[in-house]
Length: 130
Length: 130
DNA sequence: TGACATTGCGTACGTCTGTACTTAAAACGG
DNA sequence: CCGTTTTAAGTACAGACGTACGCAATGTCA
Image 1 (spheres, each protein chain N blue to C red):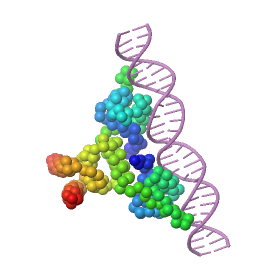
Image 2: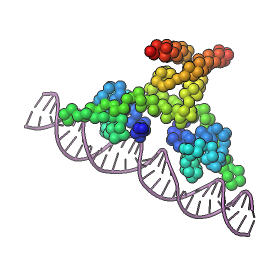
Image 3: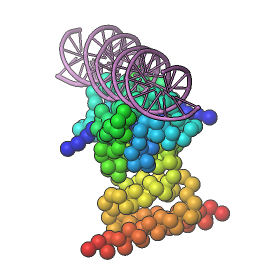
Image 4: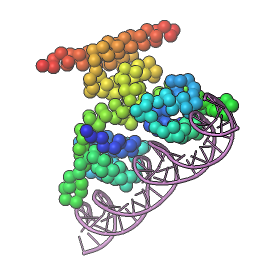
């Protein structure tokens, strides 16, 4: 159905900035990127242009400036991106990824409880969802 | 310290094939890739060559053929790859990724129990640890 | 109103990546 | 021993990507 071309690293960075802001001009997106890994203004411009071409962003004109906003719901893009990643590294299965997150990297006790809560909350919601 | 160039999609596929086999010739790696997404033999050859250049694989000659084996431990590559991914999409935090896996995609009841077990097992191991 | 800042838009360019062909030498099967 | 198969090694080439410059037009503040 869909399948716009995947996001590249740089594109993802600015897309996320815009998602966080809801909508933004190039300048605003530029400012929103953490200084340490912020590229040149014109580079951000290029990424945004490509994001529009790829169908991830929609631009609305306000006078002379353009305001960019998501064309695809961020949540969907995230899902697709995680999916793709899981396929490439874990044969598309969530569990091995979970296992990796739990075992193969320092997970704190706090995180463990947090995960337990997430699981329980999720179950409850499932039930509610009559 | 390190930072060999990152793995590309295609490179990762064959790297994983070789990891699974422990070590392999080009031909064996080629065969090990699921037929539906298996590229041309020579493409696999190219990926392997690049993997060697990038420092992921080491080749040992046996007569005329070369046998490739990991130069970097797969577990480490996986950790780095997941890390990079988590940084790009979840600001480097594991919990949001977990939340995503649990909430934003269809997780089954079985998977939920499996995760609970993983958590418990992990805790036990932590305690046992000396 | 003139200088400076902001933005849009086009262009550029080297590297990385996907994808593969070719050539040649060694190995194997009969 | 010869044809067939396997492998190595080199080369190619288009498209994606990171990265940015330059120019023109508009907006802004002193």
